[in-house]
Amino acid sequence: MTASARLLIVGPQGSGKGTQGVRIAEAFGIPVVSTGDIFRANIKGGTELGQQVTAILDRGDLVPDELTGEIVRDRLSQDDAQSGFLLDGYPRNVAQVGHLDEFLSARGEALDAVILLDVPREESIARLSLRAQEQGRSDDTEEAIAHRLEIYENETAPILAVYGERGIVDRIDGIGSLDEITERITSVLAARGLTLAS
Image 1 (cartoon, rainbow, N blue to C red):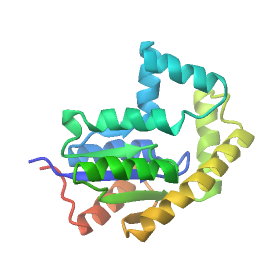
Image 2 (tube, rainbow, N blue to C red):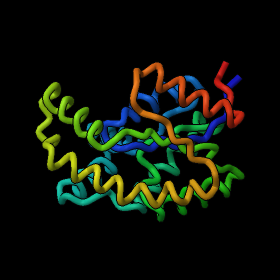
Image 3 (cartoon, rainbow, N blue to C red):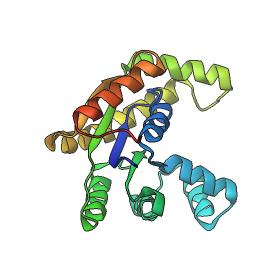
Image 4 (tube, rainbow, N blue to C red):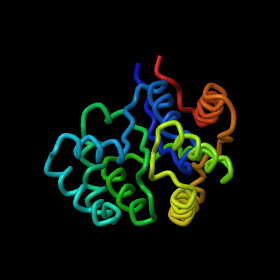
């Protein structure tokens, strides 16, 4: 039996949402739909989309809503996403929430829950600084990290307000071991009647 769950995971950089997203998706037997991963795979594969995205990123711009939306709709139309999915990185602003709503409601669907991994700003900065040292990432300077967190706070807060009004946001304490955090997430989803794949 596959469980049906249509989820969105949000959290600041360094909140562990990539790791938790994969764990939750596996527990529910649903695919993770990460816009970042899709972009990276296309760039690596040298596809037409990859070339488009590279040109945009090289200019220092964000991938436009239209293109991101198209990619997500295409991915959600694939067979493995029919009984559910976990979105990571989309929607990232209120306009994208509207696009996603339209697409899902045309299929008679809606998001079941929005998982918000709550991590204090200082903790995010500490984790990202550590990652920068371990992986030698030059883009993880303290200024760059602070700037990315600011973008996240400005863009994501309005999305959470929209989903909050629908009563589907679950705020999860993002501090603890990986297993503790996964357990917190599966518990709140179970409380919403979402059952794990057996």
